[in-house]
Image (cartoon, rainbow, N blue to C red; front, side, top):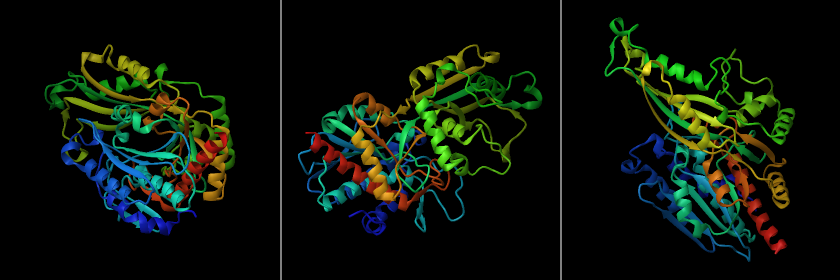
Length: 468
């Protein structure tokens, strides 16, 4: 019997809402995360809820490594003679609020409006713990055989998962022979079916500071003599991005899009139209990038891009005086094509941004890079299982699409387990606003994804039994 919304409301909703109240920001956004303790509060909340679930044999463990964010694992032993491990992945760390939310909504005060929940981190990715465990619990309640499963919830994903590889090293024996990975941190183009991600972009975050003065000076006395730190920053940015088109100029950040992904984008555009444009709250009159709906799908999933996601050294406009500022800092977020080597791309960026600095200004750079990911070819049994799971949970066949975000865990696991089968899916559909204001979790979508996960895990067990 499938999980229903009322089941979720009675078993998990209150705990998910409590999680939504915790400002458990990822370490990139909270340098004092150890002292603040919010990540610990969140992981303990999820661990306590996991311990309350009804499994024949399970173990809940919080793993800690010195100086690193914790990881939660819930190991559910197989209910039949099924070899291999299924890993179900999610994360509990959150992005910051970003700005003022809409009237009646707050980032850390969950609000329900109909079948939608609003708060930071519910869709990205607090729901994952609940979805994974409820999916497995439903199998056992229905007497359906499943293999050994490990639910793994990390706490540094929004910072690029810098702590994950160290934990994977420490957890290698616990994870065992991983044969199927289900990632519950991806997106969906619509809410009417299960969407499976075929690729994810990599990411490079660069903080660049340009310094020209020991302290700010009256612009009447310094301008025209001391070069502007902002102008020098603009010159550096012009080395990596064409300001008129947005095209990335550093060759190491570019890649050729595989033909099969081009065809898939055209198929999606033919069925759904300009689906990327429709979901974005673009102001009237703004011209979007891309020549067609298919082009926009590919630009979002395969194009290298630059976004300026933060600045400092620039006073708020309400207190801006006539001062030539001593420095300007910008945080640059580069999205990389899925097949680009992020480390090599980052090295190329550092060379471009650090050589032959205009006016011999002082430039300081720091960076973090994470690889993208291209899904391996689906095994026939999994291809069929995904179709059946989507039809059973939503009444529509499964959809496949590339995503523009990054999930470093997939690249890490892919390197460690080259033969593993991947299912990257999630609830981040239109209006979910991950990383933005008014983040929203669509509850019927979450229920559908949960039931689809149950179906896929059961299909894995059947496949293993039939092929033994």
